[in-house]
Length: 148
Image 1 (cartoon, helix red, strand yellow):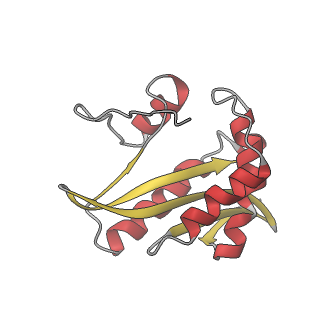
Image 2 (cartoon, rainbow, N blue to C red):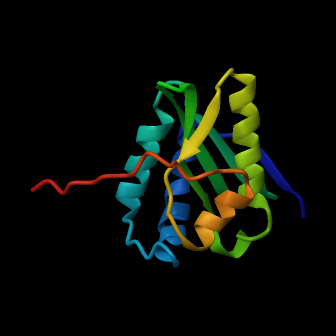
């Protein structure tokens, strides 16, 4: 059965909360997302002006998505890929790569100069992005600080 890809409406994006909970519970993430936090995260992204949200469907089943938002920096207009998630049983079938390609095509068509994302530095996820042409920044790191 073929996978279809299309732009999601903001309401449809919220259905991705169930996917986030399932995907991030698995290795290598092992994160315990609540459905409420996942929905809040997706709502924040979907309501960002200029958001691109692409869904992947098998028949009528919503099996994955990718969401990106504009982010202008010194390098010019960029598109930040904020989330990409595919149900575990559909992973390693080229769906994530197709979602990336859809976002990249939309970014090019809209005049963005680059796409970027934040992910794990090592392991299978890092290798996956490398195979798709993404390179680790030589100069930037991710810093976090816990409040409270």
